[in-house]
Length: 256
Image: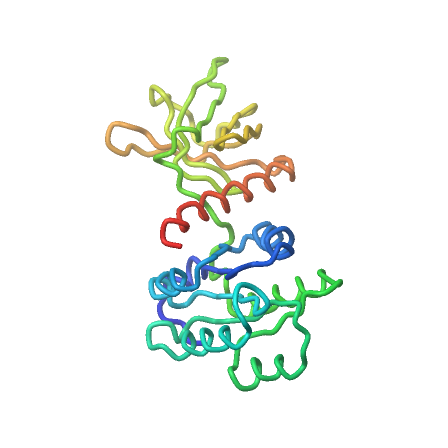
């Protein structure tokens, strides 16, 4: 596969599972999210095709057992791989179909990137998918996925300043930290340790501690960058990644 530009080299590639099975939705996608891949579920092949034209270096995994006959999937995949607008899309198969002739057809004739069989050994399948994504440099130079939350009323932060809790709005979030605005634009010295921070991500409320990395004026509001310390609970990281994926999926669903 050829890279079509520097954007994905920096921020990584979007990964779509088209008509994912229950196992993929409940096991594969959540695991990839926790590994900091940008993953989406798609349920309409025609709408996905339009999205792929917008993100032409994406990765798509198709289950040829789902939604329509395998022969129709063969046609859809061939058109995707040979269309000028989507020829740089990487297509893989993830399915319970272990027919050796079908597998050879997709790998050797159609030339998909992988053919992963989902049977009892999910760990082996997961490792195979992970290797494929690594070979495609799916993360690019980005280490962490993040969600922009500026226009969401239920993404807030409360943190103690001089013994009093100050409320603010989160602008974006990752497992590394948040950027936010705070009521009253308080002065917080760089590298100040902030304990007992409460962040609200829609219905999820999390407690963390962080360090003020710095701030800058943007119009009449000051934006603060708060980096979480290494003492953050692993479960908090898990829940942040889950929220980010839900946030990104909701935005992508407008096109899907």
